[in-house]
Image (cartoon, rainbow, N blue to C red):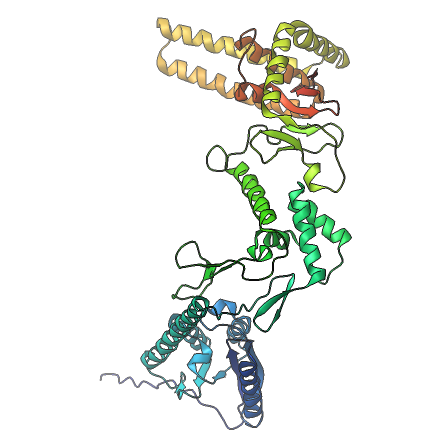
Length: 511
C-alpha cells in the first residue's frame, strides 16, 4: 500500500499575548529648518504610534539627520539598525516611505533581503508595502528605482541651479573663509582675523615652512579656531585673500553614490576677479604660490618624485637636523631647522656642487693615504681584538673555515674540468660545501651585528676592497661610489665639511 505524504506548510502567527519588538527609521537629507521640523515630526509620530499599540514594544528610533539616502554606509543609524536586526533585537521596522529608507535601488533591495534573512519585516507606510506579506520584490524594486531616479534628478537640478546663479552673478557662497563674514550677499573683512592671515603669508614669504608657521600660530596667536597644518595650507592656496574667486572647484557626478570630487577639468570652472575685498596683495599671493610650486617640484625632480641624491645624507653638526634642498634654481642646501623650528640655526647654506667636489677631494686623499688611513687601522684593530679575546677569536676561525672550503670547492671544479670526477659526484661535493659556506657566513653576520669592534673592522675592509677597484684619483662625482663608502656628511658652523665613512673614520674638508 502506497504511503501518503501530507505537507504541513509553515505559518508564522502570533498569540494575543505576543508582543512585536518594533523599531522605526527616520531620515532627512539636509539641515534646513523645514527638514529639521520634518525630522522631528517623524520621530514624534512613530514614538507615539508604537507606544499606543499594545502589541508593539518600542526598541529604538533610528534617526539619521542631514544625511543623504544615496549611500547606505554613511548613515550610522541605519547601519546600527541593521546590526540590531542581525543580533535578534527587532521583529519589525516602520518607515514612512521608500524615499526615506533608501534612494539607491541596489542598497534598498540588499538591505531588505538582509533584514528578511534575520526574520525582520519592514512596513513602508505611504507606499503600503509590507515585506512580510510580499511575494515578489518587483514592486519594491520599481518603487526604489523611482526613488533613485528622483535623487539623481534632484542632484542634477541643484547643480544646474548653482551653475545658472554663478553665470548671472547672483550666486552667494554658503561657506565663508576665515577672515571674512557675510553681510547680505557681500563678504566683509573681519580685522582681527585678517591680521592672522597677514602673519601667515608674511612668515611663509620669509622662508618658514607650514610646520613652523603652525607652531608659531599655536604659541603666539589666540583664536577660537584650532590651527592645523592643513588649515594653513588652505589659507596659502585660497585666492579669496587677494580679492579673486574661483568657483566650481568641486562637482558631484550624476551617478550613484553621489560623491563630491575635485574638478580637474571635467566641468567648467568660473574665475571672478576682484570678487571681494582683498586682505593681502595679489603680488604676495602669487609669490607664495610660486614658493609652494617650487617646493613641490623638488619631490617631482628627476622623473616621478625621485628625491635629490643628498636627501637624508647631510646633517648640521651643531643642532643635528638634516639638511634639505632649498626650493630655488641654485641647488642650495640648508638646515631644516630654519623652516621648521622657531629657533634660528646659523649653519651655512651649501650648493650641491660643493658637496660633490668635497667628496672627490676626500676620496683622492683617502686613496693617496690608504696605508695610513685604512690598512694600518685594520691591522691595529685586528691585533687588539685578538689580544682582548686571548686568542679565542671565533670570527678568525670562521674566516679560516670559509677560506678552506673555498679552496676545496675550486679543487673539485678543477677535477671536474680534467675528468677526474663525474658531474654527479661534483654536484654532491659542491652542494655540501655551499651549504656549509652559507651556514658559516650566516654565523659570521650574527657575530658582526653583535660585535661593534668587529663590524668596524669589516667596514674598513670593505672600503679597502672598494679602493682596490677604483683609480688613484677621480675627477667626476659618482653617486654609487659615495654610497659604497660614506655614511653621512656633517656641515660645520665655519663652513667646512666632515665626511664620516663607514667604519667610523672621519675626514674634514675645509672650503
